[in-house]
Image 1 (cartoon, rainbow, N blue to C red):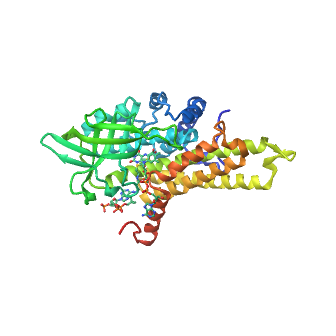
Image 2: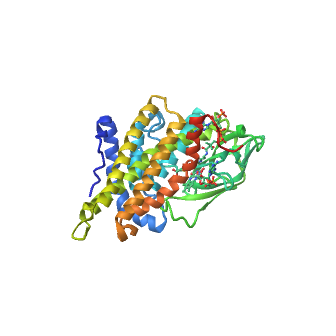
Image 3: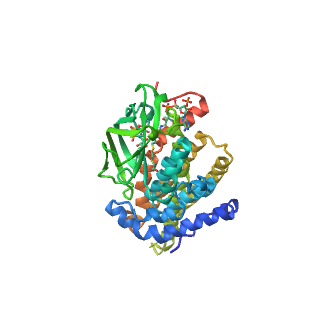
Length: 394
Ligand code: TGC
Ligand code: FAD
């Protein structure tokens, strides 16, 4: 059955015709192309690669970047709605588009030369090329400033050495944005970004086995062993830890919207089940305990929808702060995780089956809760904003 959406506060009234049209197009794409295959992909632990060009055709990669580079040139609310609809299907599908747009195309657009933009962006926009983003390392997750991947300047280019961990799309990627230190290891300021074609000698990627979450997503370890790249592999306008953190703001923004998609999928499923499942001679939706679950979900989804639209409008006006993005990522992912968990419980034994969506979303959202800054990290970012006191490190 086509998904009708959840819009208790008529937030559609806050959207333009174009924004609604974009949302509806992606909604139908998810109904027609994602929902029929996602369970199988999830069980098999496989990303549905055949959808890559289809999403490219729809203009879903880097959709808020300019048309002159082959992108859709949409505003940030429309971009957010794309992420919302994709994650209504599966967090892995949204992850793929997030990484491609916010973590690969955005840094090339923001920190790249005009030649780099023209060379890479159009092919990434269509999905002809797949990208990944290597910041996290085995020993540096929440604290990326400590990263120990190095880039040494040589006569004709750069020599990269190091390892990256938990990299979305890592094994499928044609190109990796790699963050490395060009100076002393204790100097966060020497962090620079590099565009590394994955067929370069010394570059290898290994699929992360044993995931119980985001199974329909490629997550890999990258190893760079004496990887030589030319001078123009450097993203010239990167300077220090601030550069990758600017990329994270873009991805976290998309996640704040995506989480609402996952939450609405769960709410929709919970509502339908509550109306139809009979126990003690009546639909379980007639019992107060189940109504409380539904009322709580509806309330939290509605608040998150309003939050996202205002966040998007601020972003379009160039006024959004990283802390506002942190609040939305933290709140909405936590909210979606709770909706998925409550839906799973409302469904009783059926809630553990893959035919129902709740448990897939629930375990996916555990990754979303952790990546792009854990819930704890965003708590501390907000705590620092409120108090002016830094609770990280020394
Ligand atoms: P700190 O000293 O606070 O900051 C260093 C410099 O960066 C500036 N800055 C930011 N700039 C832009 N946006 C932000 N969000 C920024 N946060 C900080 C800051 O002003 C400073 O600038 P300057 O000019 O003074 O040098 O750095 P710190 O080492 O204390 O770390 C701060 C902390 C912990 C908040 C940060 O490192 C952090 O966010 N950690 C979480 C790491 C993370 O989110 N990793 C994500 C990896 S990618 C990923 O997960 C992809 S999943 C994708 C998918 O599949 O969807
Ligand atoms: P740690 O940093 O080791 O944290 C462990 C625990 O300690 C957490 O509970 C954390 O909240 C807590 N903690 C840490 N510091 C503090 C503190 N100061 N105060 C209080 N508590 C603290 N990374 C990429 O670069 N590119 C990708 O494409 C990518 N994709 C990912 C895909 C998936 C499926 C997953 C799971 C991760 C991905 N990541 C990616 C990595 C992700 O960003 C990190 O996992 C995340 O930043 C947390 O790092 P960590 O796992 O090393 O946990």
